[in-house]
Amino acid sequence: MAPKSDSAEGIVLNFVNEQNRPLNTQNVADALQKFNLKKTAIQKALDNLADGGKISFKEYGKQKIYVARQDQFEIPNNEELTQMKEQNANLQKQLEDQKKAISEVEAETKSLQSNLTLEQICEKEVDLRMEVQELENKLNKLREGVTLVKPEERELVEKMLSEKISQWRKRKRMFRDLWDTLTENSPKDPKEFKEELGIEYDEDVEVSLQSCSDLIPQGKKRPRGQ
Image (cartoon, rainbow, N blue to C red):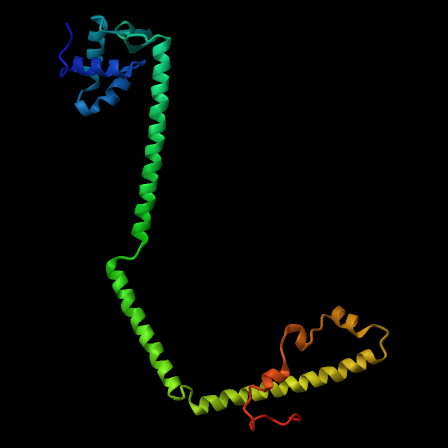
């Protein structure tokens, strides 16, 4: 007579049959903790099932190994095995497809979470409107001819620029005099000598003293000798 399914022996028997693999007492006890069965009760159930011929067992020293009786299972033939393999392959493919779909959903969810919320969009819109208004006010002032730079600030900048241009011109003249002296009696070609020393002219770096001088308003340029 088969044990009741809710009894200790019934629970253990169902588990051993479902696993259909070698098990020791500890394996069964660990797996059936959710049923609040103590190890001693499980050991007793296993022994009773083995003695009653419900499961098989073998002794290895002091340890017993239990396994489901194999004569209760139908052994598939070659054709059935082939069908099972095909079903397994189909299930594996379905599983991969499901994993891929889950990954896509997770990626889309992550993307949506990284987007701005409606509240953040509204706050951003307010900031941008204020920025646009500020720029429009500046543009209107420029159109009306309003000077945004104070005269004293402009004069200070022009003075600094004039001084820098004057220093540039003076040092350029000093270099030219020194260079002419060095290359006048030198057997080397001036161009090759310049490249050897790593010297660069203004035009080599695409700057122009004249263009920078033109930035200074007429009447505020220093005489070339200064």
